[in-house]
Image 1 (cartoon, rainbow, N blue to C red):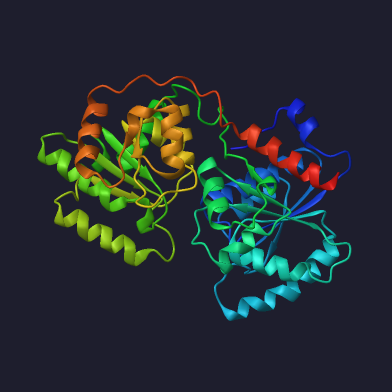
Image 2 (image 1 turned 90 degrees about the vertical axis):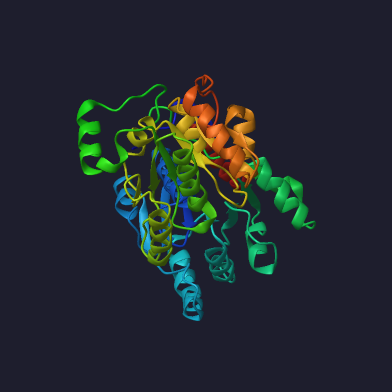
Length: 382
């Protein structure tokens, strides 16, 4: 869904002249970095600027183009020596576009962009966003070479400053990701037609409280802990259903097979459903008794925490990284020590019985993130 910027905000965030901004990202399939790229592209177009994204193809490309941005298909995120050939190709693209800003959102595209910028005159301003808690080292350090380095949480700011002592703190800006409250309205409930169609398509999810864990098909997201949670709740006589939303992706087949084997071994084949990414996440979250955030490694942010709480749905998650930071601020009842499966089961049972009230969300708005990013561009140009 489109998320317009408040005109008053747009006026302060946009520079006086038209900008050309090129964002670099591996591909446009799914994930927080990809969504942020689309949201900033949309904000640029709405503010009257030229927005270009360079990436491999992906399911989000049609949306990007429909919202007024341009797309240059180039495999700048493919981990292969052949990717080095993209340096010259990207330099030619940048020479033709003459961008004011080049904004890299991932490590390999940032390296390709850094090398492509050499020899360009005038040289565009180089901005980077650190979206994750990457392993520190020379390869990851490229994302700290921007004239401005955006991080998506205080957790991530502390992380990069502790591992890269040469990094000037003044170049690091915390710009949390945000959501459009109109996309996730407080107290939303799906209409009967959607509910009937969804549960007819996935009957295994009907008949008991639904637990939803949204996340890519990677071990980081804690799918195993979610399956074990449902199994232990069942052992205690608490029937639930589990939806692993977004776990089915190209290239993740072996991991999905591993999860399927675990589900079968725990006798949960009739209670757990795995799905690819969907567009109707608002209705799925709103139909859920609990949204789970069980990443076994700290994450830089926790966008689904904001989405769920905006809808007035309780969140249960491990208290570390960006997720723990958000839960501590917005929903302390949903925090559980990382990896403590016993406490996880107990807290899930408590929240399923009586969840503490959730206040309407007053922060982490998409418009705030868009405004702050465009203001940062303006600051560099000025």
